[in-house]
Image 1 (cartoon, one colour):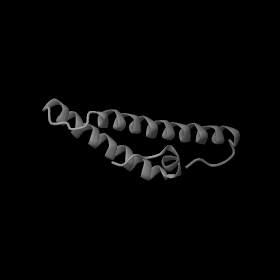
Image 2 (cartoon, helix red, strand yellow):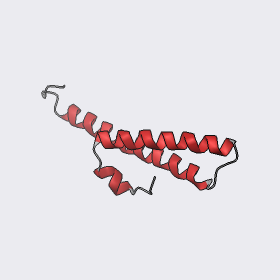
Image 3 (tube, helix red, strand yellow):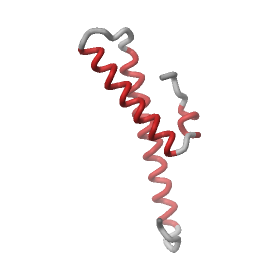
Image 4 (cartoon, helix red, strand yellow):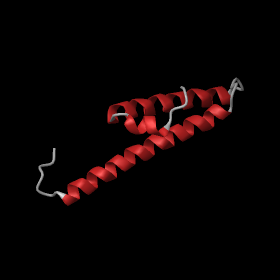
Length: 80
């Protein structure tokens, strides 16, 4: 997976973020297997994928908090 900038992640929809998170987790799993079997070419990829996962989680949490604040400020709006 190519290096993804935070601004690119913020521009993604929730569905795209979820897909990016899923792909990063799958890649991290594969890299861990390769590391255990001593076939990992670039150990720095583990760190890159862990950080990408953390970035996606951070953006998802920011969006959750923003939605909760908006709901708290406007309690008359129907919740779906």
